[in-house]
Length: 405
Ligand SMILES: Cc1cc2nc3c(=O)[nH]c(=O)nc-3n(C[C@H](O)[C@H](O)[C@H](O)COP(=O)(O)O)c2cc1C
Image (cartoon, rainbow, N blue to C red; front, top):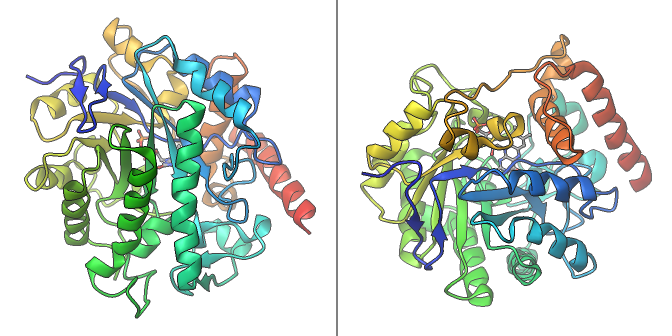
């Protein structure tokens, strides 16, 4: 029977030493010029001691003209190669796999820090507190621009492979560019990139194929995919099933299931009670996905107790347990499980006490601050004040916006 300590062999031959994975969390710890910093690298040194089977980095941007957050790392050439090597080396000598997540934000790029915002179609974004900062309608990509972005995914992935990272994950979820192409709500194109699910999936398939061609058959490539984006007229469960079938027949190594976007943040647990009835938010969906693919499946969102994680694995419906927020509060999470130090991993819901600030995404900012503490060699602080954290974040954003003119 499968359990948290069982190994997993991926289709490419890579072995995960156990079933616990840190899902991607944007660390927002790069320099103002989007290079990795010592604090960022050090956070992975700490996580690297935690015995997880897999650590996935926060999203790394593939284009310096399309940034999700002011301090994201960008990899589009080899100018920071030595720093990337240092980052990739943080888990060497352990059995933990360290994968990067690569991303293009598309219409979810913040106008304050990006001059031109591109997306599959010119569909305006409506995000709570962020909408004041995101009043721009994105510009629909031309076909040559689409091909350029596909090349960029492969280029970034190759640089990261050469720097020593063990694998790569395409960010195909949460309303970023790949998921914008997949969704009929954000993709209203009438050419070969829009319309039927085959056309909407063309972008992700081309990205995957190009990456596979340059990375080789034995390098792990995974994807984070939405079960649905929880928007009327958006990417549905049946669309998602089709995409899973397509990626499975292409030979992808690991499919991580999540859901939602920053317009409808189901991935953070902001879903109807019916969807949330089990500890893991997207468990019902993955059970159905198991019937249509033999590719390893990872489920992320909501896992908090060892008991539920073990039961989920034993059910044979999924292969890897993904956790994000708990890893920012319990950096040695897998080791804590194996040594029986913890059986429940709380995840705090921070609030600044001011609704407008909370709407801006206080949860992300608060957890990023915990990751910063880890990188600084401090222990995470469960009672960290959300109000002051927000002002530091806003300051960084303004500084970047000011610099961009
Ligand atoms: C601070 C923070 C940053 C995140 N950044 C990313 C990211 O870069 N890429 C991604 O796929 N998901 C990102 N997420 C979402 C998580 O990977 C995960 O899907 C979500 O938090 C639900 O899992 P959990 O309940 O275990 O936290 C982020 C979440 C947090 C809290």
